[in-house]
Image (tube, rainbow, N blue to C red; front, top):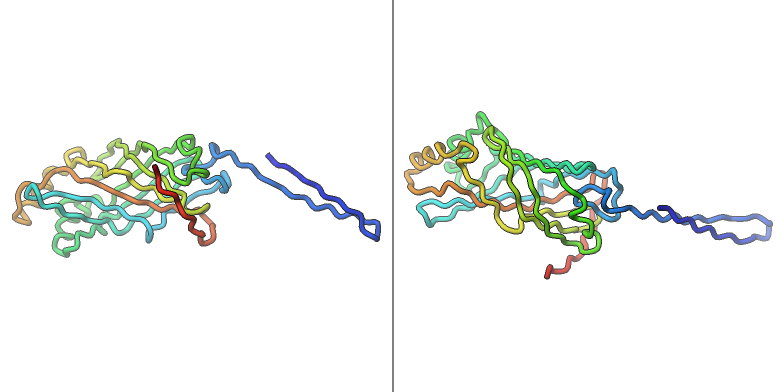
Length: 229
């Protein structure tokens, strides 16, 4: 909806100068997720790999918790609400070089499956009040493609509007990923034999914080976000 305000005044030369002020009201429901109230409907978004992080925790010997990261992450979010995040499994970082090699080649078998991919179709209606609240919680169904297997999962997420051109999409709680769902259970045995450990729990707890930036935007001015209640 456009509202036009015309202001006229008469000059000594009997000319008229017209100044028009144009205001644009963009309905959030036609924006992409996470839909920013000041963005245009055709905006696409790109994941900021330097600001984004994905970690997963595994347990060995029943009680020893190890936290690993995937360093190289890329992704996009289109104006149609199609989200895709790709994980370079050769960038798995356990903090120990030898363990990195084991995870990449024995467990993930990166020589055959070098990457994993998360895809989702986002409903903008779930984030209709993001522009005013600045932070919104939701349940996001997604598909994880890992080790040649596709699996439908869901995550409880928190979407935070950092600025008008930058948003964070973070897990509210860790997402449980069961290795047997992706044909990785035999590879757990390989890890146990190679590392001479026992009782590696065949479930990983995955946490993430993905930061998306509007394509073509200038460096964002970060706005304070009130704590959720």
